[in-house]
Image 1 (cartoon, rainbow, N blue to C red):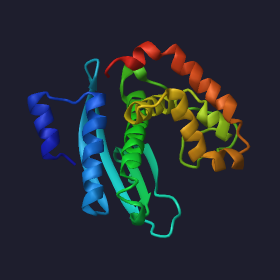
Image 2: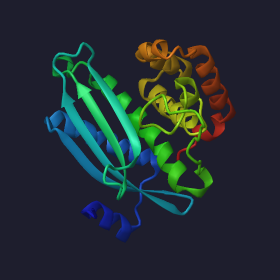
Image 3: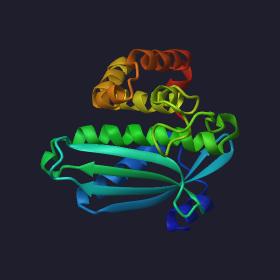
Image 4: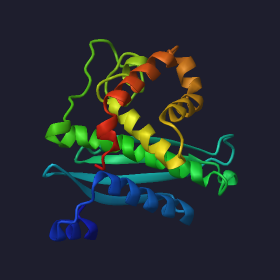
Length: 224
């Protein structure tokens, strides 16, 4: 669906950078969350090296008054159920009793998720970032709707997911003003049950992510 923002972006040529997209989208999502709405939708055009990518943003806010933790975020970028377009979809399940105390943590997680999915947008749309979906002969095991990977470990260390997770956690570290390694450990603390469920060695995953981060520190410091 073409909206006013799309028309203005195309007419003025003022297409946001990736950093600006994460900043603008996170602010709008937080504003929508505070308003108490159940859904927020928007449209962005991102530009890189002369190439444009369309991002349909669809965020759902789901109240979970009985859940123990403050919130959880599930995000993905890919075809919608109709298959007619790609969308960056996000579901935020939250316990309203934990807010506004958990607001700062929510903002960090939203920016992390947006940065992560923006990487997948680039992998699908920009020639210099293009990465084919991961293909394995073994059946899909985790997670059900992700690019194919037979195990949790192979999913987390696949060629598509490593840069996405690292860039998301770099953003998280900057927002929270902590080290990248601390952001890694915070991630593990949040998902330790998943690692235990799939018998995934966190230290091996962490090493892969640290190695990629070290090899790409210069480019990660640049504004995209």
